[in-house]
Amino acid sequence: MNIRNTTAKERMLKKIRQALLQKRENPHADFEDSPLYKDEEEPLDVTFAREFTQVAGNFIYCDGEISLIENLILLAEKLEIKKILAWELEIQKLLGQYGFPIYTTDQQLEAADAGITTCEALIARNGSIMLTNGNEAGRRLSIYPPIHIVVAKASQLVMDIKHGLQRVKEKYGDKIPSMVSTITGPSRTADMEKMLVLGAHGPKELYVFLIEDRF
Image (cartoon, rainbow, N blue to C red; front, side, top):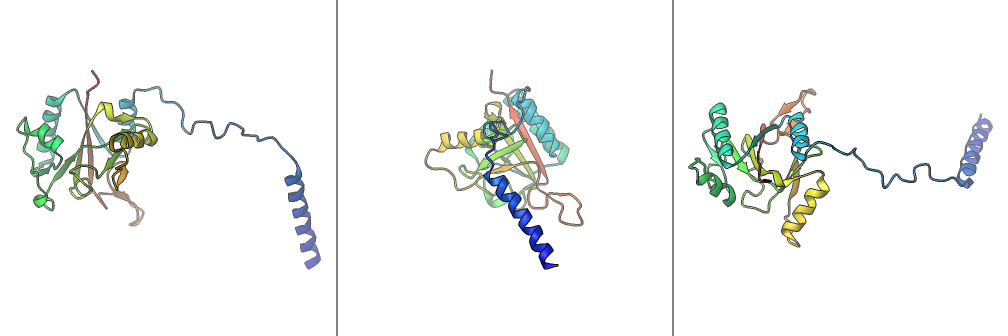
């Protein structure tokens, strides 16, 4: 029994040694240079919208600021949103000039129906949103309210995460924010009886309002 096992082991090792001694050309010489994904032929906004909606995101295209305000009002009426937080000066200025009602301090955080933030980039490849804590919204506003609304510009669309990270590096230089993350759809989990539940660890609904600024 032991002899047969030893003999089989020796035969196996002999084959391995022979294989290691044989010099073969790399069968995948161009592997490192080959693209991980196929090239996309669609515009970035079309690719992002497709991928974002596939992960339960809600995409709203706005051809300008007036369209953004109109769509925000429609959403607030539809979902009966009463308390919307906006901590970033950019968002406060944008919405304030049209008289859109928002709360600008964190005193209403626990009672907020929705939070509005900007983003660093929109990743078209997988429909993700790149965020940092480098602005007034910090970490909390994209996590606590049950509805997260992202106001983005078409010029922030990039194809891959590496391009989004490059934008962050160009914007902040050596002072990279301590948090750089991507959001792909609403918060979800399937830990409980393998049933998909949205809003388990963060917002239950995620909206991206894309403002066209590439005229």
